[in-house]
Image (cartoon, rainbow, N blue to C red; front, top):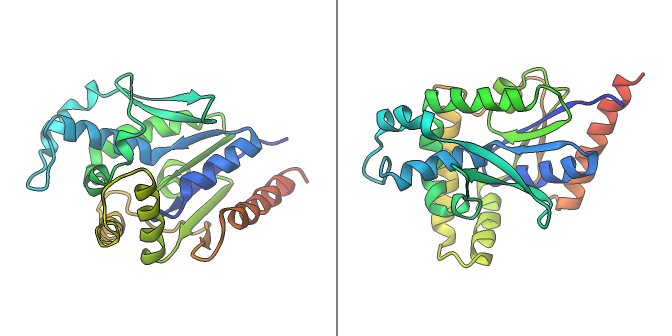
Length: 232
């Protein structure tokens, strides 16, 4: 059977990672969460005092990129790979609202994007990969056989994210999460380098009213259609 590249882009909190994990597990493909990579660099910047609500020392962060090692290590108990920053598991730390508040600003930095896109392209050389992010179908894998763009209303996404954070015990309000979602949408869509846009050949899916199971069924049918067309 042909191996394909599946690129999943979209706004924050649209369930891209959940869908990508489901697909990768079902197909036996590699899954790469590019958002985790940007979050890990953001965490590094926070830990080293390069970014806060008052300032962002981009130059020092850029000069420190060579000292940042990112890797994914598979956790057999969870069934997916976790993010490691300089050999330390940071999967929990990178999912906080604090990191969410800064990640879009870090992702705007061209040198950061160049470093990560290079790594992401290398990961996908052999195909059989599902990668999600903001610029996968437009920059990382413009020739991907299947491109999907996920969207949902800001209010729906904020509620999902709020429920997720609350379940983890984080002390946040819905209003705070909604503000974060809206700010990230704006920054991601308006940055100069690789803004969040829908690729011309991407299939847009609004999952505001879809369950995870319904969404997976829709996308799996798209995957099967692509594989069938390649094997004709």
